Length: 280
Image (cartoon, rainbow, N blue to C red; front, side, top):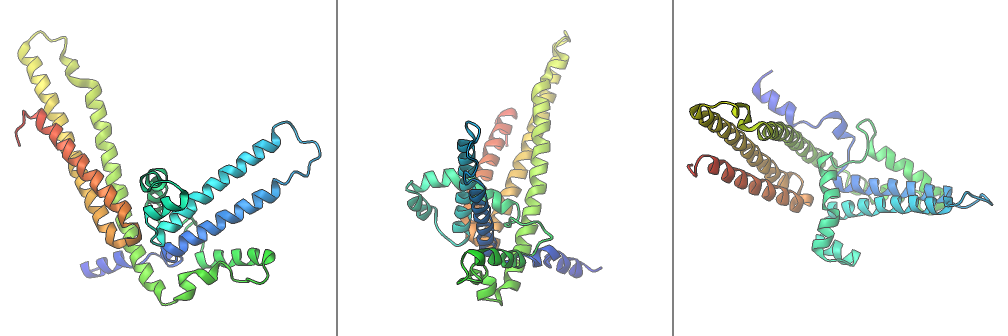
């Protein structure tokens, strides 16, 4: 296979990605499914037992509360995917922008990092949404396509190919980020080992030259490790820069991550320079 063919194959959407809709649609379907689970749990929680065990009613209510918290998290993700700002989210929640960001940023970041879909790869989102339509229609017969009618894939059918190409690019970037995360973990594990060992292995040696060489060798090993992790931080920051355009609705989250990794790289390089006596 030629290089051009390889590049074409790598940029083509995977089969499971063709099952996916736009992240905006995916988040709406995820929210609808979570709400359906909440409704089913609420029906199961109706106190039909005339003499439940002490605490059962409260435990059931608390389980519903936890499910409701899941709904709120899904709603925040759906809002971000449709372009709602953190200021607007905070306003809706009655808190500040910063508080909203601190409270739910991790959920949005996790959603992006895991592919921006709540469904297993073998399920087609539009089919799942249609099944949700049928369940909803039992309660509201006047709205037979309540879920699917609001999806971009139904309202704007031609958008699917474009969204698939964006998703393919985003998936490739997240795969690269995952690989870099693994490299960072390995380097940090090595650093922990170096830190735990130190030059103490030669502490029983009386020769000061041997001791000095041991300390220098240890410092050099730590410095090399920190420079390597700084490089990985830089590469991760670059991936997040590219995700800004690949996943524009989550651009703010990706910029935050890029800034964090660049700052981590700068601090780590500063520490490495100290180990080298301040030399560049």
